[in-house]
Length: 193
Ligand SMILES: [Ca+2]
Ligand SMILES: [Ca+2]
Image (cartoon, rainbow, N blue to C red):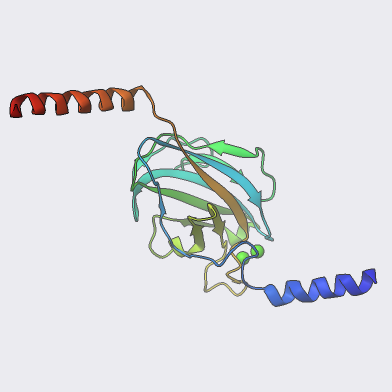
């Protein structure tokens, strides 16, 4: 019975390929921040890959441009280190900075091993953004670590999977802005009266 069950399981697994086990991929969808004053947390979910790769946070910006870069904490020029797919050091990482509605978050994935496969895939590069699948409903950001012209390319989007959580914590700046907003309305009403 056990053998039969594992055979069925193996069959199901092979039938399910090459689609991701998490969701239908959305290649190249921009990771758009939903609200002003947002902090962003990244949580490690899983990996299924032969290659080792490291995900870094480049910063915020527009669809294909980083305009708010963050400082390097890992790989030079690639911003904040988050996770290595095969050996995550942390369960979650809070990304540097706070972001406003409409800001697009950008990432780089450095394939580091085996060395002959070295490559960097960036969400701010038009030819590379489709290596990332972003599902704004589940919050899952999933990476395909090989380019379409690679013989082992499989578009499974599970070579590293992380969950993105947006937190909107109103800070003192928001309260001050709200106060000025109320004063402005009072002032306008007085002028109108
Ligand atoms: Ca893959
Ligand atoms: Ca894979």
